[in-house]
Image (cartoon, rainbow, N blue to C red; front, side):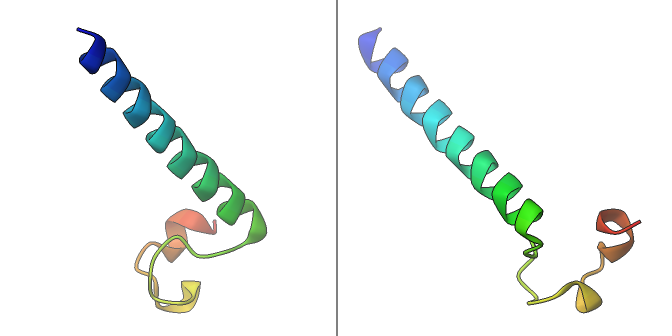
Length: 49
């Protein structure tokens, strides 16, 4: 039981950190996809309306 709570807590911290990092990168204008820029991203119309 304690192991489940500890593992769940660690996973929650990791996921929260990833989400915070993504939000910070989005505010800085960094691309979330790995292509290096929004001009080649297939989701460009979704991110930049």
